[in-house]
Image (tube, rainbow, N blue to C red; front, side, top):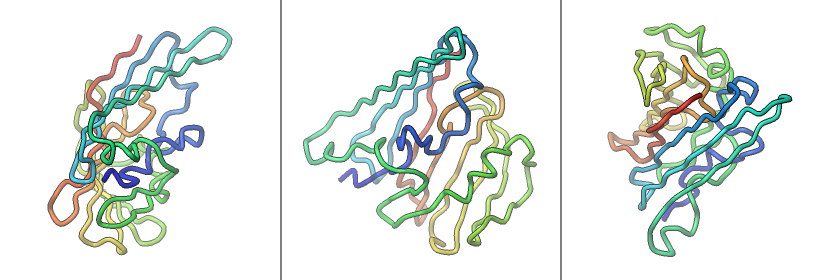
Length: 186
């Protein structure tokens, strides 16, 4: 069951896990495509987001989601949900504490550990390119879910609306992965 496999990406108007503001996107068409997969997602899904910067500080946004499967597998689409809580088979992880780090991602240093409200810890581990976007890769753990590690990729070189990487590893298995697979900018 797709549970609320990912009550993560589309409290759309609320900008769940958004790390770029619309005004950071250049004039012209920026295309971003992610895949969603893992043990919690029986049928891999694809999310595409187009943001077109128009004259007069206006934007045109188009989001499409693709998934294929049986009715019970598609009953709850993973890209729909709410805010900053990530629901997986192992439980729920509140990602709200990461908001400040995401907003200040350019100031984070590889090798540093950042203590977050509620006792969570983010460790900035390395820089890596994902779909042509330079990212800071780090891990997030909380005392409430000691067997779960959330690996995050924070975009540094280009505006990316959602996280380029969000991988949930529970008891050594990837239960959920959101991965940017294509990025095209004007």
